[in-house]
Length: 471
Image 1 (tube, helix red, strand yellow):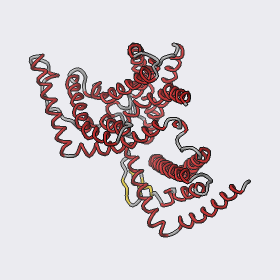
Image 2 (tube, rainbow, N blue to C red):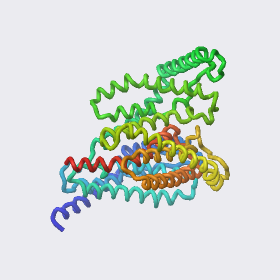
Image 3 (spheres, rainbow, N blue to C red):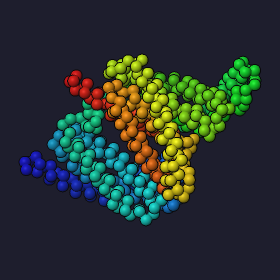
Image 4 (cartoon, helix red, strand yellow):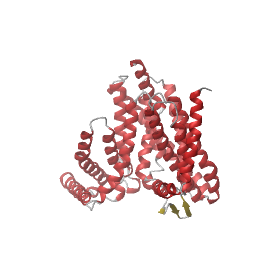
């Protein structure tokens, strides 16, 4: 053991003692920990609300229908971070690396602790006897292992910039993903403010008026008023019609776009209202046209409009990646492959989805809740999960250049099996914990998950290979 290691151990012990004294001081408890406890309780309640739990917060206590859960000052993770900081501060690396390590540890601990408190309340609200196990054993393991893993990873890579391993060779991806996440979260809150504002109500009124006028004109112009599905009737944009995440995705994508900030702000300010208007006007028109054919409960446009547009947007990006960036296939061949694979994917997805809705879902709900149907399924968001994800995965595998038919079939089958397992776990979680996930966010992740898996399986390895060749 050299002098540098001995020095680090001594300073680590000294800092641990100093931080422990600080953590136990009355001032730290009253000024810092009280605020952290309240903040942790508020954010935990906010996270649980996205899962459909009705909770309230009072003085650092999360109140659910089954009980009260106090986010104590000792649950803030303050001393865990102090131990982490005591190991980082005397570490023999440049101060820039130490500061980045502290920032990484702080963000990671906040996220881990938020996950821990949310998990404890979620499980304990359904199974009260599990509180001690999840709070004392599982919760502490999650925090300790998580922060230790961050420190070991940072220590190993401290001479370099601290990034996630799979993003180390592409900082643009890391930055874009971070900005997209921030933009989506902020955009969702601003979107709610817009909908409730005077201007938002005015724009919604325009959409309703213009939809009614266009449907009436179509009926009179082409069908002389004989088709009832085009007859004018009051059109109302209720909350469910406005909950699609596509408008928020627009904000998040522009926010993450690698250009000057003034350009991003101008696009969001000038493009948000036209995008909102055109998106919901087209949706309202298509629903008005198809309601005479399909009722609202099973209407394809009403239930899947936003997800369809999101699928189209991401498939365009996949086509651009293969045809223009990697130049592995022409746009014409890509389109032909997509048409062929999409037909097979639609048959496979609808078939597996139908079997799941009539066999798997009733079996799970009967075993868990004693019912034959899902307790939460707004606009078939849950029950259509398998149909959509299997369709997307088989379509994506089908358009991938260089794959032999046997490998395509194997990957398609593997994707179906994984989707069924994940879907089963989702249904079980909903029924066991009485979850009601935010519909818009859930539909958003249903579409993006197959694309994310596809990207890291097929597109990202080629990105790394090309990057290493250029270097």
